[in-house]
Structure formats: C-alpha cells, structure tokens
Image (cartoon, rainbow, N blue to C red; front, top):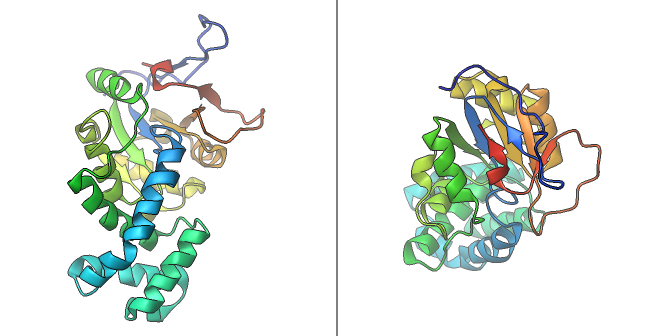
Length: 252
C-alpha cells in the first residue's frame, strides 16, 4: 500500500485547461466503455457481434452447463420463468433486454460467453485508448491496486482486457466487479465493493464517464474523476467531479 491518503485535487501547475488528479490513495477503480475504451467499439462492434451470434450459440450450447446459470438469471431478470426452459422464450426475452439496453446480469453473462469465441478466434480485438496501457503500468509500478467495475460480466471483462489492441492487459488487475455486486448507480454497491476490496472508500479513486455512477461512488465516500473521451456524451457543468481527458492526467 501507499502512504497516507491524500484526496485528489486540482494541480495548480496546469498546461492550458488540463486538469491533473493527484491521488495518494491505495486503489484505482476503472469503468470500461467511455473510460478505457471507446463507447463506439462496445456499441458498434461488440454488441452486434453478440446479437448476431446469439441464435447459433444457443443452438450449440442450450443444454450445456455453461448456460445453466445464464438461463436462470435471464428468467429472473425478465420476469419470465419460461425463459429458463424454453429456448424461443429465452431468445425473445434476451432480445427485449438488448433493445432496451438493460444492464441485466443474465444478458451480460450471455454476451460474455458469445464474445469468448470471437476473442479466441481473433475476430474480436478490444479497443483501448493509447494512454491506458502506459497508465496501468505506471500505477502498478507505484504500488496502486487496480480493479475494474463494469456492467459487463466479470468473464467479459477478463476476455476484453486479455485481448486488446495494446496486448494482454489482464495482469494489471487484481479484481473485477460486475452487477452481481449491485447497480453502478447505487451508493450501496460501492460500499459493498470497498468492503470486498478491504479498503476504506476514501482510499479508492473511481474513474468513469457517467456522472450518475460517480455520484453514487462519491456518496459512498470514494474519490471520483470524470473521464471525457472522444465520442462520449456531453456532460452538463456543475457535476462536482474532477475531469480528465486521459489516464495520463491521474498521478500518484
């Protein structure tokens, strides 16, 4: 662990409008899409790959143990018990969840299973911004504990960071969290996450592009930073979070 916790602050030695977060805590928690990776890659490449490959994947794996938990979870998420046993109902409910962009645990688990074949074949290579790998390396060298919190399943996260445009980055992370720990827009999720991590919330810096997620983390006592990336939605001023345009702007 690093030394005493120092809350992030604006660096007075800025270049132009650039803001630097100086973090003296122990752990950095990262979002994925819009933070480490372009939103367009997730929505324009990964989601269509899972949707287009779903029917054939289910035909081949419907009775496999790998789908047991997914079938149960989708039935729970959709409120349709028949989805657990009937493939046609399952597919219909999954498509409805996709169309509504619901961050449902069962849907995310299924997408992870389908993406695995794409990453294994090389058809999928996860996009990460150029500043990500150097920042992860620098933070790790400084003794910062790095973890991911995403609506995508833990399995999908591990696949993603194991097959990126900057190579295998999975070894930089000591932990992964998904919606099994709770919604990313609820403060209680971040409290549970910090407890699982074994850190006080104030020892953790959470970086995301979604203000509602940062609000929840801040309510739980975490330090926060808003990532502004190309293609991200515009954010109204007055959100109360420090802003960075690159992970290089987070220093320890």
